[in-house]
Image (cartoon, rainbow, N blue to C red; front, side, top):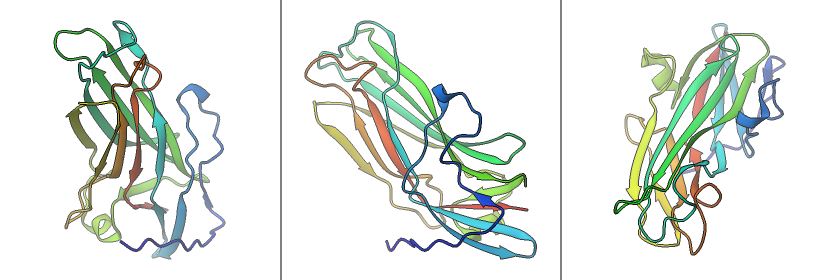
Length: 202
């Protein structure tokens, strides 16, 4: 799919790439995001292209640090959230990696990425396409969920081409489960690339 890499600057637009007073433990700057901005009937419309969620290894919360060839069974959830008076768009990635075959090792947690800010205007909707924004009743596009059981020591890569009508938030997912050594809390985790997002705000 051809990706638009053209960017137009509007004086009221600011990408949230450097933080806005949010606890650094839950903030992750996002790189590689391009914008295509337009205005229509008082609304600003900004397209965020191929937003990259950097690799996140959730903390170990149970057991030792090794899955030892027993999975893990991995569950991933990605969702959008509005913060700070609906002027900031954040993406959260939840990962749960649970040892199989009766083992109790588990890594689990959330990572939040700040991907867009206005300069005070409230975000009206976040959609997968401009057409979706015209038809979508919810303010945010639906979350993404995926699960699999790891069977080796390699990287697990998954692609999720967009559907018609568009319903998929995540475009590509890359995960590490078990490794040859200690991994829970350090090497087990995922990164993701999102499909284009259209952000509308006044």
